[in-house]
Image (cartoon, rainbow, N blue to C red; front, side, top):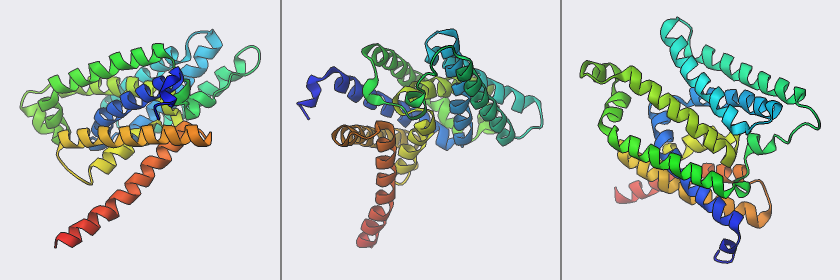
Length: 271
């Protein structure tokens, strides 16, 4: 393990794994508790259009991806509030349009088509030091935001209508949350890719809920579970030379599958 740390790409990968786990522990718990998993999938796949546009215009694809992700998050929320269209219908449309635009933009890009594997499935071992710095800043902001608004977030997640009666600006809070979800997903795309970002946001919180139903504990347990499975998956992918994003997700699912029967076993032993 210590030998691996002599390589800068491994240091960047480990830092990204821990930062991604913190993001997933906080934002993923909100997504799971508010039942926004489908919407997160819509945002992730819509950002593919922005990544394709970035290649076409010759700018950093993740920057244009952020624009598409924010447009999808705010667009779905705004249209849903003003029309009778169902959330699933809107998410499906944004999802399809984003993917379609991405494919068209990539096809229109001059020269050889760019390699989209990194953006679809991620590669944590190719993360740069600059990206780690950017991700550290975003994770720090997410922690501070969550700590400052924790009581309001808890009320909003538990009962939106009741929290509105108590004077909480739920619409503003919703837009802020959707914006944070969109930005966090774009950061995760670099680590595990579009296809697997949703899995990383949902599996650790789902595993944490086996141990607790209290919001803060779910977030803390999710961060711990996410850190262990991310670092473990990254090391396995390095040793066996297999894709890191897919390995992290498969290890996370394996932990989820093992934890539930183990907990049931110990509960029976106590009885």
